[in-house]
Image: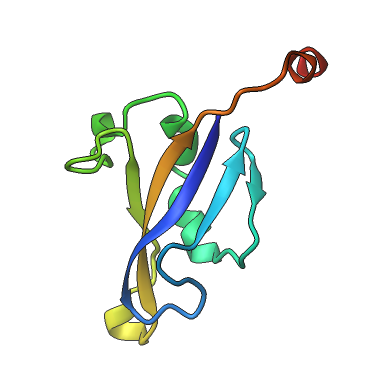
Length: 107
C-alpha cells in the first residue's frame, strides 16, 4: 500500500512547499516526488507512517475530525520564532492493484 502526503495548510511562509504539493511513499519505504522534500517534514512523518499503513490513526490521536481514515501531522518549524513556516500535512492510503506478474516477482 502506498501513502500520499499532501500539503493541507501553511502557517507563515514555507520556503519549500505550497498548498496542494504532495509526495508519495511507495510500498512503505520508497519516497517518490517531483518536488523537493523538506527534512523537517520527513522527521515529523517518521514516527507515524508505518503504523498508518496498518492501523487507525484515531487510536493514537492523529486522525482528522471528519476524515477518520486520514492522518495529520505538521513539520517542526516554529514559524512564530524563525520567520519560516509550519506546514500541516494530510496522509491518505492509496490502494494500488498489482498485476499477477508483479505479485509473483515480489514473492
